[in-house]
Length: 440
Image (cartoon, rainbow, N blue to C red):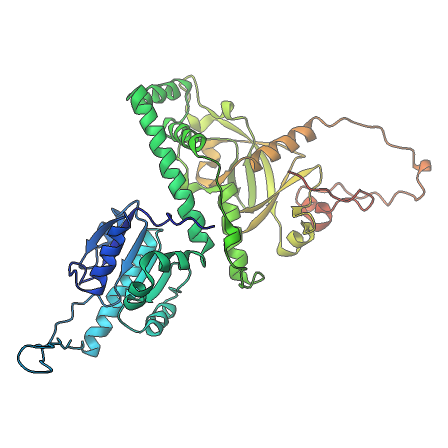
């Protein structure tokens, strides 16, 4: 069952009639307040700077026509003053086009700055609004919902929002996670305020003494403390209908790969420029290098400059599309590897890179710092390190005499280079090997 409290919190209503209690948006505002939520009412579009300050918002409600419409003098239908109906003056087409342009600009800014869902409640035709959104690739359903104000009032705000969330598992998961994150964050900071307001300074000084990057280490401590206070998640995606999208489409695969890459690889732009750690990935002259030196040895001590720090690197090469396909094992959801290398995928924008264990390269931070493209995260980094350590400690076993084999040995060839080892054949297990089994 999908929680009914996902939309509790703060709603932002952007509508030129939001202060009019008799208007439809005014009545929608009253319904939201009656449910126990809070409302930030704006009668005109906020600026980009103002949007950036709207944090912890549950959702936005935006009127499609943000330009105030003046009413003509009231017309009496039955005599003196009775049944007076204000006749709205339609906007000229040029002003209507300008208003649509401003509304679309607002929606783009909201989507760019905030992840909260955006509901367009309008008196206009739903179909015409949806066409305008599609023309600018602002497709309803992904981030937006378009409904008439009359329908919202008829069904009820809560019912309309609950109906929409059942069509967007991404919004459901993110909103559910955000609620638990906010609770854990509050628990963490309240706990530490009660103990000592100086705890960040205490830890900062300890990191400085150790020679670690203090900002990065303090951020890790905060993140782990919040994570330890988050209750086990109970996502209920069974309440969603079966998806009807094309799972073989390029768009679908790109979206999945983007999520997978974000789970295992941080781009260099998100890292502290002075932070050096195992997992750092560099690209030099078409080759990739992965730092596997232990974290404690990546800290600069004794007043030495970081430029002279030596990193221990595994060299890697990018697989072509054909090579990557040959390495895939769809049956068990794995990428095939040999004992002589590790295959990391996806990193740096849908790339599969094979890092060879045969040689370890040493380069200084000064040689590499401008070539860093990101950092491989655990457990994916830990797996590479463990497999590399096993390779380094592998025992030597004597060759069998050729006479014990049923077939003669093939003609000896030159030793394969690291680049050659990254061919499709190298990523395949030997034909006599047992079937692959899933790994954790």
